[in-house]
Image (cartoon, rainbow, N blue to C red):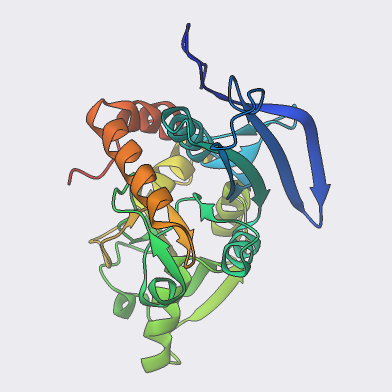
Length: 275
């Protein structure tokens, strides 16, 4: 996301990228923020993804890119009292970092669920619809519930809300279907369908659209099995003032059309929650 002419703020990479234990740490400096001797500017460690196109990833030049990255940048520009520093990792590591306090805030298409609400705080403004659908190939037919997936092979990404939903169903129906677990890229998910490794994928509509558009998987889906949105998530000890500031910035970005613009740019469609 390019900085507008005349802006006094902005997020950009400084000093390159440090890779430690599969986590890429981006030192981010805002124009006019880190250069000034203003003790009121507080550094906030923010977690996001390093290999999750089109949400958060490293591009061919090793720079962070994606919808969540662009949104973090847009939020930072609105908050002169904070300076964001990014730590990029896979999703399970992101959760561990936030829980341990290595990061204070995280944005990587994170949904709310009962377990996360116990361990973390959430922002109040959702930015991507993540209603869970059961994606299948045409030959398998549309599935409207986990009950319809009986006897099939389901893929879930580790530590996601879809994994939580799947495990909750299996707790009461342990022999309903088999499960493949992992942290697959979009391409690997497409290959998994084509090879027959699995034939059901709990996912939001935009992920299904992306698979069909990029890899020709021709996946279909029935009714939503769960309603959810993506939100900023915070360490349970995060300062309420920070959370309030992020909520305010997010509300402004939704009202002025920035969220929609970012969704259309990165996700190729308007997947912003309507309420």
